[in-house]
Amino acid sequence: MKSISETEPNSNDSTAEFSEEETAKAEEFKSKGNELFKNNKFADSVEQYTEAIFCKISNTKKAIYYCNRSLASLKMEEFQLSLFDACEAIKLDPTNVKGFYRRG
Image (cartoon, rainbow, N blue to C red; front, side, top):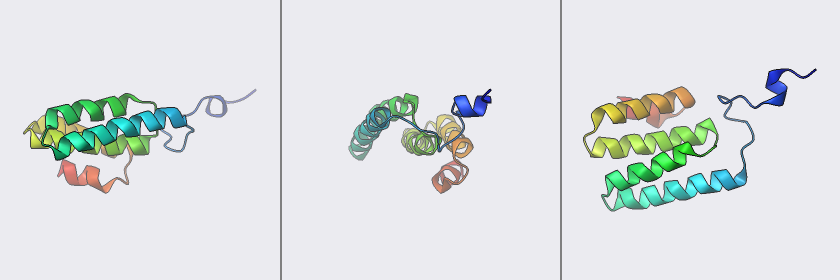
């Protein structure tokens, strides 16, 4: 009999296998978000980063998207949302330096 950890990937495990399709979709949302951010369309970039976060991807990648969304929220002076996203990034990937920087 297999243990649960052998049959189901741990949702907190950033090394679990994720589909290339889902990862590519998330990266596309991130790229769109980055382009919108560069054009000072922060609210629109937040929407794109949110879509990326909803994809089934590794926690390490998800932490990056939370950091991006945190910065966009900061630019819109949405300080509580920015702080929340920074904290989420740290929870998902405690080695993500930008998460700590954004939280500060």
